[in-house]
Length: 233
Ligand SMILES: Nc1ncnc2c1ncn2[C@@H]1O[C@H](COP(=O)(O)OP(=O)(O)O)[C@@H](O)[C@H]1O
Ligand SMILES: [Mg+2]
Image 1 (spheres, rainbow, N blue to C red):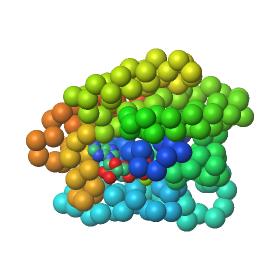
Image 2: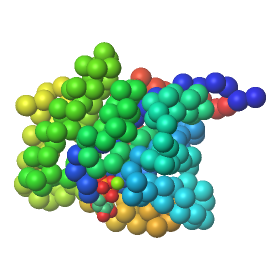
Image 3: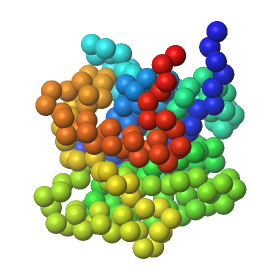
Image 4: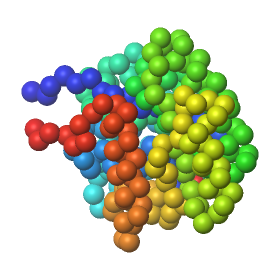
């Protein structure tokens, strides 16, 4: 008989398309799957990118289940509540627009929200909308769930990107929403693994990519107050 669970819900959102939401969702959700947690990827984007990734059918199955939530016409919050009884963690890949009802519903039931972003000026300028939505959702939820920025496709050899990242770590305008200490570098292992329905863990010569994912997962477990590894069943 399976135990009744109460998943921690992590919403990955950003106003901007191409910010790294889907890549981050699949890589990080899969990292927790590799750690032995029961993980669900909830795809709220009608472009279906996370669904395609999780069900690409490589040599080994993707280490998380999939819920194509954007096809669901009912109340997303209610459905997430039901799904939470079956998983340890739910990662929600949102559509690229913060005014989507799915994004709002997800934020209201979130234990943590992550805002992936690239580090160009147009990318970081667009964060304002995401921060405002997070603020509104925390007020409405009556719960100051943690919200963190995650730099994606980071090129540390570039001084403009290093500076942009430093600014996001401090986040003067929204100090309650700092960047995670870890960022995800600009790496082929993160993008190629999509073709194999896998995470970077399955790719050759991907040690640095894996180290970044493990470090992001450690930061998330700390923010959620979870044990680093799931105990043996
Ligand atoms: N860490 C990364 N390294 C290299 N390329 C990345 C990384 N994250 C995202 N990308 C690329 O950026 C583009 C947009 O990423 P995606 O995850 O689809 O963003 P979103 O879901 O926010 O639209 C894709 O081409 C993806 O392969
Ligand atoms: Mg996407």
